[in-house]
Length: 266
Image (cartoon, rainbow, N blue to C red):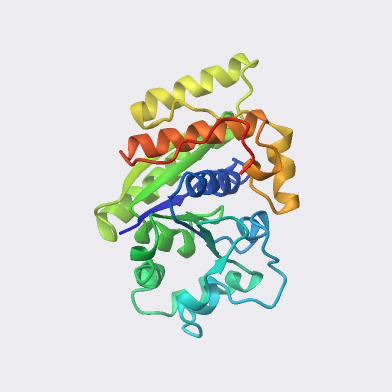
């Protein structure tokens, strides 16, 4: 049965989608079957994996609305063992429709339960908000991965996210846990960034991954080409960081995997 990890942070621009895409791609390259679920109406994870979100395709919205079976929404990407449930702009209307549904917080959990046995990992790219879509993701997942940009404002909004997770744990998903905290867009030359990093590590302790993701222009460019960084530029600092993060994630999960040599284009 696959492990469901939600990538969540209501603060936009912290590297959430970038982390979801690239971590998923590396884990797939290491021999695991991975499904990315794009729950952000902006559809950035969808286009970042080479799927045209403006095309006439079925999306997560169609399954939430009950129009299409979830198995018929899953699309193969160009990368082995990596599939995606795409998002289109229609997903923005799902928040409104969910309000009127019975067990509205558990609709996505029910949909994804039909796919758990088919994948080693299901990763969910949550929208940058704490609305019903994100609550659905938190209710459906086993654990939450929290990407945090090493700056003051993203840190300031962290308490709100942690409170939401606490409420979900109390009322909707008692087994939810923090998978880990990922430091993103880290500029090691900045003393302030180091101070913020230390503050995050004090708060979360061992939940913070040792691997931090640096600021890297190649990481920013890759999604516009519809490619994860392991395809776009495996020699970049960003690619090496995500490879090391994927190894750390799987090691913590005590899951064996195929080793990938650095700089290897998958």
